[in-house]
Structure formats: C-alpha cells, structure tokens
Image 1: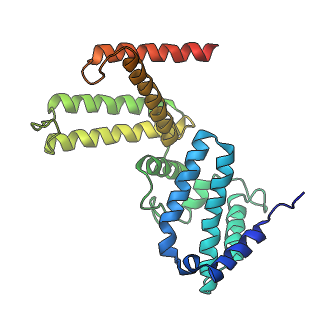
Image 2: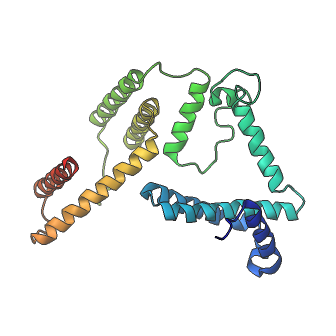
Image 3: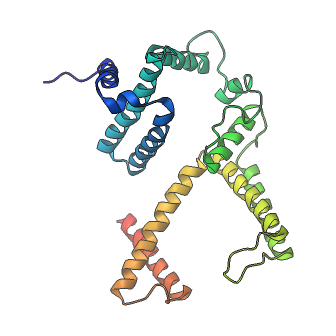
Length: 266
C-alpha cells in the first residue's frame, strides 16, 4: 500500500514547481488573488452539495493557494510556512486561554474587541453584505450590545416591517415607463427602511443560531428547485409559463410543494 502524502510532500512539490515551471515561477501574491477567491467558491459549492470526493479535491486546491503564497513569501525573504503555522498556533492558544494557559474562558469576540480600534477593524472590504451584517452584530454582541434572547430581534423585525409598510404607504415609489423604480427621495427612504429590515432579520437569524447567508442560500436552492419543477409540469401540460398568469403558476407551485411534502413523509 502506498504511503499517504504529507504536508511536507506538498510543500516540496510547490517549491519544485516554483523552480521548474515557468507559469508557477512567474506568479506573484497579486496575480494569485483571483485563484484563491475562485477556489474558495468551488470548495463552498462542494460543501453545499455535501459532495465528499469534491470536498477532498477542492480542499487540495485551497491548500495549493496557501502553499503557493507561503513559498512566494519564502523566496522573497518575507516569511515561510513555519511562520504561517506559528501564527495559527499562537492565535488558537490566544482564543483558548482556558485550555492553553491559566486564563478564564472568554468569548472570542470579547477577546478580539480588546485589540480592535473600531467595530469594522479587520473586516474584509469585499465581504458579502449578509456576512458582514452578521459579523458586525457578532462584534457588537462581544462588548455586550446584544439582546438577551431571540424575542428582542423578533420584535425588532416586526417593528422594521411596520416602518417599511408605513414608508411605502406614505410615499409610493414612482416607476418609469419601463417599470424600473425612480431613484428619488421616496425610493431612497424605502431603500433605507428595507435595509433596516434586512439587518434586523440577520440579527434574528444570528440570535437563533442560524447564519443568514446559509439560510438564504438554502432558500434560493429550494426556490430554484420548485420553480424548475413548475416549468417541467407546465411543459408537460402545454402551459406557457410566460403567459399563464399568477393564478395558474401559483396552483402549480402548490402542487409541487405538496408533492415535496408527500415525498418527505414517505
């Protein structure tokens, strides 16, 4: 049986590629940035689909990016993989003072808050909005700015929804001849209230132990699956979905949903 490869083997391979492959040798930290983002998304797809072989492959691709950047830095005399590992170990020890020292157990966000200059300090600029909202709320909770339980954010969602309804009723959004909303004061006000509502929903998710981006991702997948089923049913019954109208499509939706419920109960 062939011995399993080690992390040292992967590091040696990366160093060899930087020496003997023209493309690998030409890469820089900057040129590699798009690949890291792409590989992270591909890994996320595999995790979403719970595709174990794909997870293994994509984790390897993400590891390649970590090794690539580490070896590039090593060759420029900045740091090496040992320094990266050392930073990781030191960070994990600091996060768990009750396990790796004689400190008390403290929430991670509370520990980090002691070192931050502001609530946004260190958050990536390109972080998706839902994830950013969750992290901002986590950080605020780390210094005690948080609801006691899920009831507070649930009430806040209801409050923000009322304000959205009031704003729409008070100043309906004007639309152009093409149906697109006009970006006037009314639109701006509705946008602001809807932003508050979304932020409140993210807080409700967080307090309920759910990540809003994951919940929405699953809701998107469910909607796509059900609407695709509507399109298949419509095609089977010679129904044109573009002209069928809401009542017909809604009936198909209910049929698809009922079919899913029946299948789950089997």
